[in-house]
Amino acid sequence: MTDTALEAVLRRDRAVVTAALVVIAVLAWAYVLWLAAHMVMPGSPLPDGAGSDIAGVDMSNMGGMGATVAPGFRAWALADFAFIFTMWAVMMVGMMTPSVAPMLLLYAGVARKARADGRPIASTGWFFAGYLSVWVVFSIVATGAQWLLARFALLDPSMATDSAILGGFVLIAAGLYQWTAMKGVCLRQCQAPIAFLASHCGFRSAPLGALQLGVDHGAYCLGCCWALMALLFVGGVMNVLWIAGIAILVLLEKTVPTGQLIPRVSGASMAAIGTWLVFRAL
Image 1 (cartoon, rainbow, N blue to C red):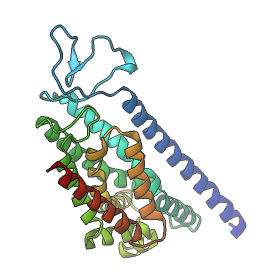
Image 2: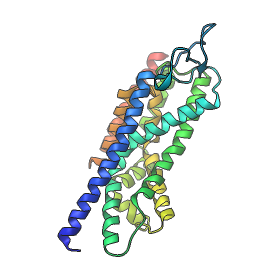
Image 3: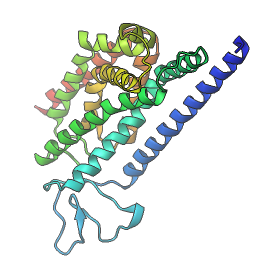
């Protein structure tokens, strides 16, 4: 295969992967927007005579895809856990897919060239599946955290904490984490895909090896971003502008070549706002 032909194939592969990532992200965001438009979280029990409910929400006049469900302050059923887990998992896909795109495009380009050279590696899909599996596990933890906050009536109808002190301490903790060495190590792995691959012995030919490589990359990403995701409980789990703001911050941290500047500036701002919230509430 000539260099010109190879470049054309690589461009085509990048276009296919880019299109697939755009579709995945758009579908995930569409689901989040749909939930934000239909989801309510009442803080009081249903009145007598209300229809059947899921997680404390009146379902008597809701049908089909327009049904509105969200966990209230009563005990959750298994269906509530499943619904909220799905919400978190899809939201994580929508938030994290853009920031992992550079790594996936690099992987896809190398995979095509490796096949052309007769040394194929596992497909990009295996790597992406491993990456997303980390965020699926995180979604389980986030669902448990939401259940705990709802259990103690610490969430308002927008699924944000209604305690200024708790919200302030979460902001302070997230802001301080932005300055930690662990944040720096994880962020550097996310910012430099080639360096990450070099430190993990490069690409894998076996699907399970590529899956594990994706898990490793996802673990660094989780180490980089978990504190930012906790901020969803401050601004509202279904506050679309807040979700988008955190997603943009994650994307900027990973793709804009400013080293540790963005996380440290944002971290200082979070800590300052959190401190102000706590002192105002005292």
